[in-house]
Image (tube, helix red, strand yellow):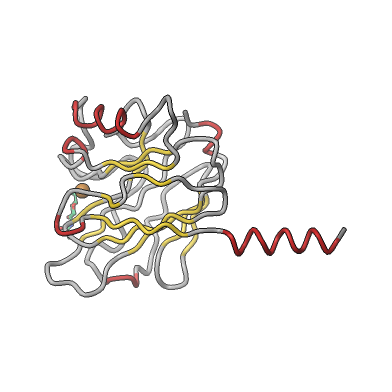
Length: 197
Ligand SMILES: *[C@@H]1O[C@H](CO)[C@@H](O)[C@H](O)[C@H]1NC(C)=O
Ligand SMILES: [Cu+2]
């Protein structure tokens, strides 16, 4: 019995996957890939390659507005990358619910309205294409002034590469945020999952 429990736990650890998403590849307003199908325990890691983008949680209905209710969504904050940079900021979260889709956008206006959106586990009813179409269709995109409610600005927008020392420390109720080991921020999509769409 005990043996099987341990074996199962080991398997879970070993089988967890990390999806790397490139943000602003070739200077584009893009996430590459645009969506991933992830399981509980998987990590979605964003690598910011250019410009000054965010990964900000939103909703299917309002792709370009930060999620604020019932809880504040997770947010990478602005990650600025100087031209010619050789180190790139990273930010990641771990999926703790794979029965619910999660929706994201770039909170740098007007990137979302130009289709800079991302999803984890879109469904047959709520497809990525529909989400993106709504974003481009442009219902009142994003945050005038740039700073999303509750998130504060990025603690480290100066592009010191992967050494992002401080987390933006958003006040998530359901998401737990911890510092990665000197590199990426690690965010856990927690109980918020069940409450959001
Ligand atoms: C990144 O964009 C935000 C929002 O527009 C802005 O407040 C911030 O100053 C920018 N950072 C840099 C380093 O340009
Ligand atoms: Cu952007």
